[in-house]
Image 1: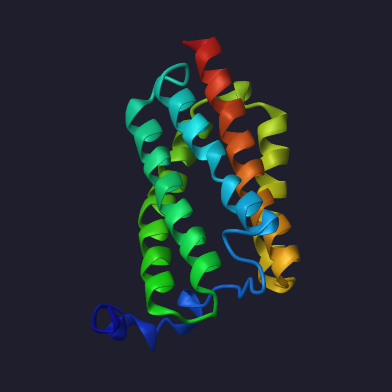
Image 2: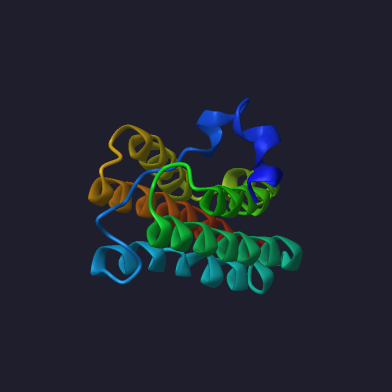
Length: 168
């Protein structure tokens, strides 16, 4: 695994550093609750694929949820800030999350005036939570802030999927 990551670990060192969540792990209430914040992606994927009218985006969001569970589970179970297994899981997470976000943007923009204001507020709060989790990265702070990134981002997307269902 180190050989796979070695070419990108040095030039993108900051890109592969993650929060150390010890002493909490996947078996603690805090760790389990944090990992559980990913359940929103599975519900969102189903909503996008059905009522939201975009089965491809729905499937991609569900894959992003799977990648996020794998990443955060390994983050909690292995700890540290530079473990190769966690970094690989992080890359898999990025591989599905980034395309999901990039494909979601035109999906949301296609709503035009029907774009829910609540979705914009949730999206802004989600991004603020993500950024705040980079600054305040103590284990419990990170769990709350990064978990809010998951939940608020999914809430924004869910509102857009519901709006799509109304205009179809």
